[in-house]
Image 1 (cartoon, rainbow, N blue to C red):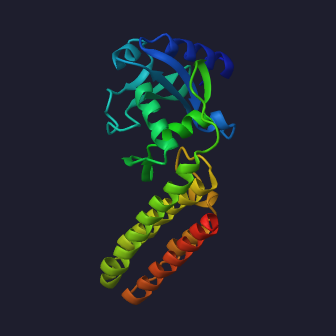
Image 2: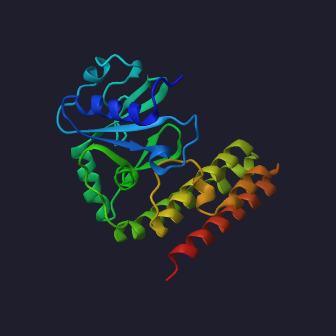
Image 3: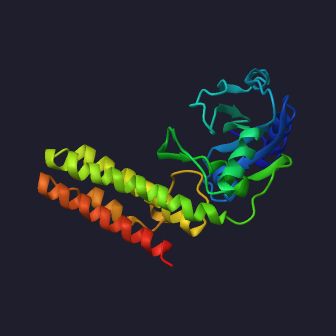
Length: 259
């Protein structure tokens, strides 16, 4: 159980993190940064470092939990972090290399990005995720660059990229999985394509995304939920379901990119 008020916990924790070698800023993210948290929500904190950050310094603070090494979560832009219990609260600490953040920010402003696999993110994460965090998170200690408007170049490039991936996946499901009555693969293909298209829709709108929670609904793609929920059996029926998904997703993208 928490032993101190939230504001005291947050201030003292931010101070301890900011004092770690190489750390230049600390930010609050997730639902608590947006004000949409539940009473049992985790606390998401990011440490922005420059140069040689050593997780051993965080481990030495002595908080209960697991402190992972750099690169342990895939080695991409979401490179690692820690799962801790601090003052009776569940706290996720994420490591953010400022050199990487600055590079990906510059890339995103030119409409360039990659999609990296990451656990708990069905379609992976775009490297402009780091820019989304800068736009949404609350800086608690230090200073961080704040992006202005959603980059126009990204609003053009990201929808085509995401929907292109979705369309390719569904085409393969229609040709390779549906004829074999592979219900699980078809369901997975539709779910993945729906998530990818949700990214496309929100990018076209200029809306930042930092996680998968509520992503499909936020993009107005509840029809995908219905398709998955009512997925039929049999090759012909599965083929129709894939075709219906293609129609729904293409229509959603046209609605936000037309003109």
